[in-house]
Image (cartoon, rainbow, N blue to C red; front, side, top):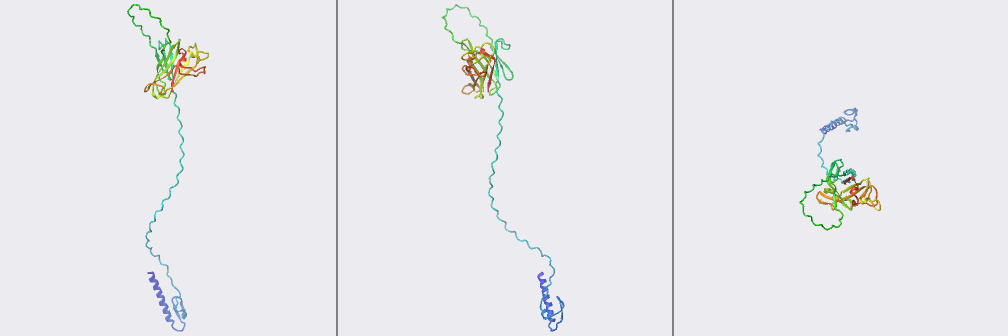
Length: 307
């Protein structure tokens, strides 16, 4: 439409210019109405010339063009390279060691003499760590048997040969006690023998042990009384002596499955007569052995521990 309008304007201009040229065909200079210059003399030099171009006001913008088609979708980029591994973490701190277990409780054995209120024939009293007392009394002598019928007097026999030393004597003390650690109830037996006029310690026997006690240590404390004469061979002060009044003797033995006897959880371990012990009160001439102690030299208390 705009091109059509502009073409119409140019056609009008050419038409008007032609009119002017027609009126200017004479030789005289006449005033000719000119649509662009007003009234001015027309000369031959003015003919057929376009003096000006009228420009109309700017028209409104045309409508927006049709949107173009979408471009092609771009290809996916290449994957990035893996990152560098991070530094290793710092190791955590080690846990603290737990506290040590409490030591096993000890039990004291007290020898009771004949005439004791609890054991008239004598025996032993066991005292555990809580103060509980257990009494083990000797049996009363049996009544004499009935007399047999009187028979004829027999012939006198030959004289006997000299007698030897006596064998194991009666038990010095026996009983049940709880000593904690690997077992809470065992049997304790103290044996002595009579030989050469002396009552000497012969054996300490612990029975009824649980298998859990394997590798534990059995400890027995024997205290020598501090007053009165001593009778044991180890108490002779001279060239060789193992103890004197008031000394404390400790005998130890490792409880091992190769050394015990008995059945499962009913094991027996013993400290024998020749077992070497330690005088923990003072260093004497020789180390004491169990059979160097006289049963008459011991104080009232004997201690036991498994730990």
